[in-house]
Length: 383
Image (cartoon, rainbow, N blue to C red; front, side, top):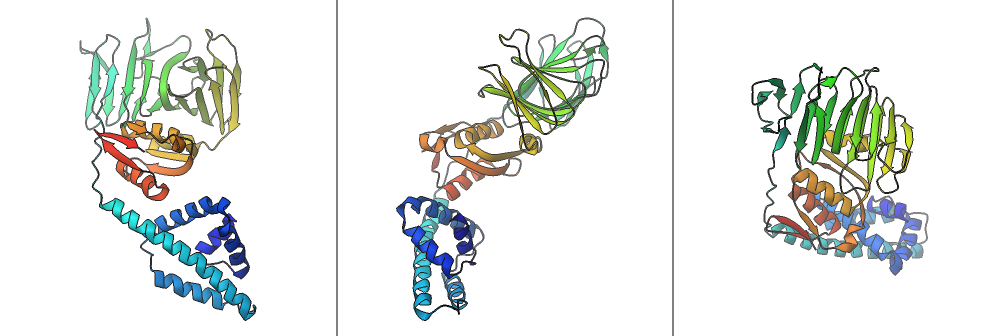
């Protein structure tokens, strides 16, 4: 039936299709589906400024006249059914149109995202604020040079540590992203709401270890003598040289590793009550369940999990509740959802966060999916 709806909306339905569609529309069980199709189609039509009723009528008559092989009685019946469907859609459409423009006329309070700063905590406890608008040399309070910051990238000097390792911690708040090049040449792209703890210089003995909270895409410099290990709660991800995404946000019940190329080993930490290990191949995602301590894997489209590097949120069959968490993180706003039923609804969308404001994103959902929201004390409240 969905194919019939698409054909109808694209003006390619024949008389048999119209008969079936007419019967389908009369069934209350399918009323909701039909209504959603009409609403979505009408929202797109409005955005393209193609809402001429007379033009639709002309197309209607032209389509009916093509059916020359049918008797007059059947053609007339078909025409009436087609007309009934079109009139119903136009009726719904103009109601939607009125509501659409009324909503546009209602002044909304603007949302002002919080402006938290990217910070770098040095080994001596000193905290530096990193401004992405300028370039600077990063030094300790006693003048020791650590690295150079250019825009949103901090690059450390390529040295090795002879004695005790000194750790720095980079924290990236919501609505920001930042890159770091470690002393071994490994590139780390940190997503919003993430932090990375790492040594200023890696030891020439043993493994290269870093600690991640949140999400990062890593391009690990190859060094077979010194495996690279990312510690994420109770999961250790060990590689020699590869590119992968690791998501370890606190609100999620699992840690996810998506491998773009190379090989990685997933293994529970030694202090974990349950021992599990798995080798991951490119194009697969390994998931570590924080509760059961089990590791599983599945084939995935890696681009869906790495699009955030370019500032995009790609949503595929995700619940509205999960979408709101991503919006809060990317835009650094607070969203309160009072619509429990809506939380479980699933959506598909692609959001370009560097081009679209949070207001534009919310208005898209409001216009296409009839979601109501208001701004209360700089918070988004969905009703």
